Amino acid sequence: MEYLKYMKRYTLLFCFLIIFSHIVLGADQGDVSIRIAKYKGDKSCAISYTFDDGLAEHYTLLAPYLDKLGFKATFWINGSKINKDGSSIQDTTRMTWGQLKNLSDRGHEISNHGWAHKNHGRHTRAEIIEDINKNDSAIYASTGVMPRTFCYPNNTKTPEGVELASKNRVGTRTEQHSIGSKWTPEDLDKWVNTLLETNYWGVGMTHGITYGYDAFKAPSVLWDHLARVKAMEDSVWVATFHDVAAYVKERDSIKWKFERKGRNQILITPELSLDKDLFSEELTMVIEKKDINKATVEQDGKQLQVNISLNKVFFDFNPHGGIIEVSF
Image 1 (cartoon, rainbow, N blue to C red):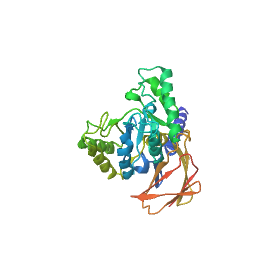
Image 2 (cartoon, one colour; image 1 turned 90 degrees about the vertical axis):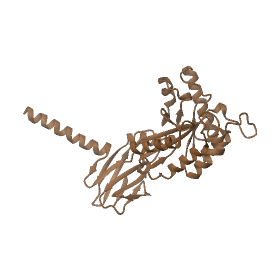
Image 3 (cartoon, rainbow, N blue to C red; image 1 turned 135 degrees about the vertical axis):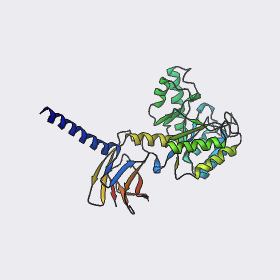
Image 4 (cartoon, one colour; image 1 turned 60 degrees about the horizontal axis):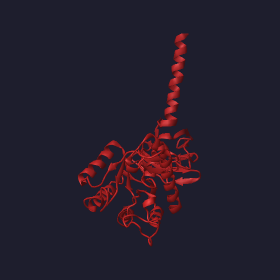
């Protein structure tokens, strides 16, 4: 009897683990395997290019090149250093609020690097809170978009500073890879190749392009690097820090339920408990099935764009949305 009791317990535990793996992690469903892609578009790695301090040449020199490639970047700014407008330039090395608004309207991220760049290791809790909140308010007033990420001044991170900066955000920059003056084209190539090999998210950081801290030895080093990454866009997802940070947290938090409906249709119900006002990045779902040559996918009455290749279907979906209907 004791033996049967333990066998019953282990059988129930085993069944629970199987169900859990199907709902939470994704697993084979007979001839169908379902998973959430590690990065948008089922790409091998992700890169976020981040530029600190709101330098004028970020707008005049850098942004046009990024736009030409279709890349969106993150600009961490200190509000106290930004010029009010083009008619009252106090610092010719910095952008204006109007230029930041224009960058935001073009899809780039304008985010918080502290109003006065106060080092979190040298200021009181009240001073840190003021520095963060004042910059949030100024950026929102200028761009109409509330910053949902944070970059630590001087890259100084304290437990208290991280706690304060992380509130109501999708992420903060806790690690980065300098891509400025110290790096050769070969170094940058090695960085990207390592990201591809390890399936990692790389956060590139620099300040100046032609002047200022960490400026490149020649701007062509950056332009050529970005062009090479563009040529690898089938494998590399380039997006703002906000978008990748949100995607990663949603990816690691989402659950789903699976149901078959006939021979050639499946229903998938996504479940995401994160705040939908903060975490609204679409996720990529990958369905692997032998000999797939066609598929349609609908969610909330809308047909989703489907990509088919090498026995798999992948598509972007709303993680807070309703049932996903997949027909083969």
